[in-house]
Length: 359
Ligand code: P6P
Image 1: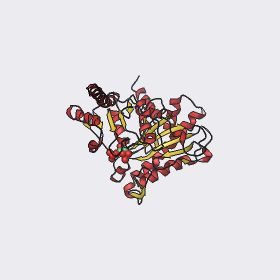
Image 2: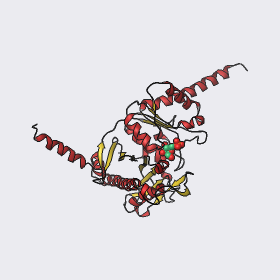
Image 3: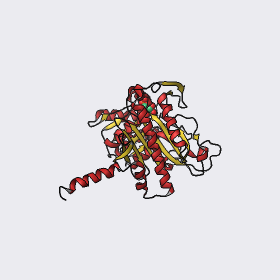
Image 4: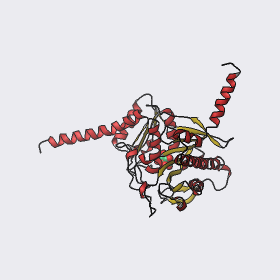
């Protein structure tokens, strides 16, 4: 190829990438222009619009009145509500309200799902989301995220309880997160791999930046709040004692799930939020935190488990059900599980030995 032709090819490739918007990428992934494909593409586009609105507000939070700080309310989780939590929650409702795409929105911030009756023909979609994850970081300008999952409504849900949402994570048809960091990134999967888009503020578009992301099978990072060490069961303590004695591990914990997961997705390692004395079932919510991230990480070649069961197999008993979470590189999640299994095995072995001692 002559030197003259070279710049044109490079320019064409750059242009083509700048034209690979999120909605186009979804259609490419589905190899289809069917009504369902168009719906899913439009849903992802609406999520991107919500992300742009939230990113804009976050970028000026320190300059505007009424953005930072608490509302004075406590949400269904028993957590103090940040003004940014409410704003972000309302943004998702607003961008979907007139869309004709989504029948219900189930959010960390709302006790019951929000219904959009005119959008509720049977089989319509439901958005499950954590509008601002890690909102404790908002007031100190540290990265936060939004987490989302798309499911299809099953049945009529005529009493509007969202009962059909209480199914395992393999019912998700799409999932992802938005990371509001130095740049705003949207990372998603519709079951055909994991792809990352970076917001180009000059275009006002999310542009494809990484395609078919694969998480390393092992990585140096372990991400956990070691301040809870005293509350953990022994096997988790055994794992932490192990990594403290091994070369090659490094601790990274940002206090905001999306940033910690994003780091592990690209660099490898494991994030842990196990059950504690105060919260035996764990802190993180299954339907709109653990399950969407498990869907994504499994699509990237990683694993997500409660310690004894794959996250995607867990059936919640309530919309705001919580679960312990081990998630990240395949080898690292399996290593943590091995400490849990070994302890269980030792306990069984000791119980058998005790049962054989003559009374
Ligand atoms: P802790 C934020 O409140 C959050 O839900 C996740 O984003 C984060 O991983 C976790 O809680 C942090 O919890 O108990 O370590 O402060």
